[in-house]
Amino acid sequence: MFKIYLLPLAALAAVLSYAVPSSAETIIDEWAKVKVPSPPELKSVTLDPKTTAILVVDMIKQTCNEQRRPRCAAAIPNIEKLLAAARASRVTVVYSLFPSPSPATFPNPVISDYVPALAPKGNEPVVTAFVDKFMLGDKDTGLQNILKDKGITTLVPVGVASHNGVLFTSVLAALRGFNVVVPVDGMAGNNAYEDQAAAYILTSSIVYKVTLTSIDMAKFQ
Image (cartoon, rainbow, N blue to C red; front, side, top):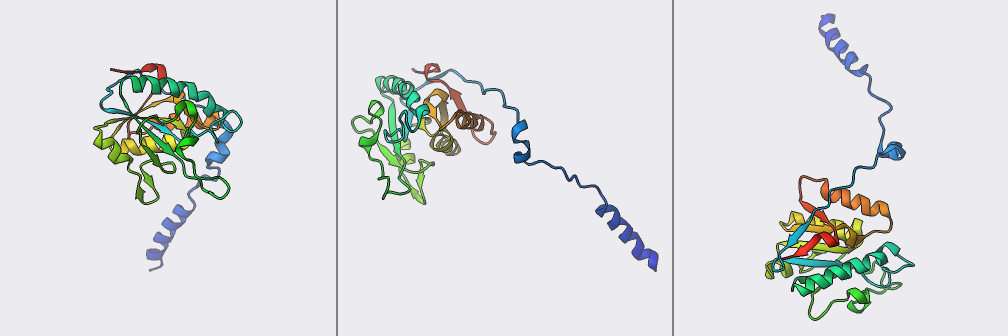
């Protein structure tokens, strides 16, 4: 009788005595030892003007300047060059603004706050949202309809921040079925690590497809 109970107890003891590693490391433990991955491949792309849209993300003068965000300021000439080529080819250009989390101390940006060199022209549309430019809370910003109504199948996001608006909108655009092309010299974070992390994330998933390029490697037909 006792043997019947002793066998299961012996098995349980064996399981409990199995050595569980006590030195398992988290990313905090490994932080200083993480090896930087190789740079993702940048690809030359030829874009169809009729089905491509440029999305200029949150490039306002209050934050995109040498004092607040020098990396953003450095990206202005690159984005300006892309916009000139896009407009010359009659490519759709859309803008976004980031609503202020505290309007009392920092009013919500308006179109006139855009960096002058990159300001919207004519009737180029503008949407307002946080990091996902398709949604503001539970409300549709209208970006999806703007793109679909114009027959857009490829979205080219540029602007700030690489790890916020550019990253999240790129991923969510890809998940919505758009082809996404991101010029890495047309996006800017607060530091090099944010740009590097965004570039890595954009090309490391098998769930969505994003192509990385540069301003000079992107041409219009």
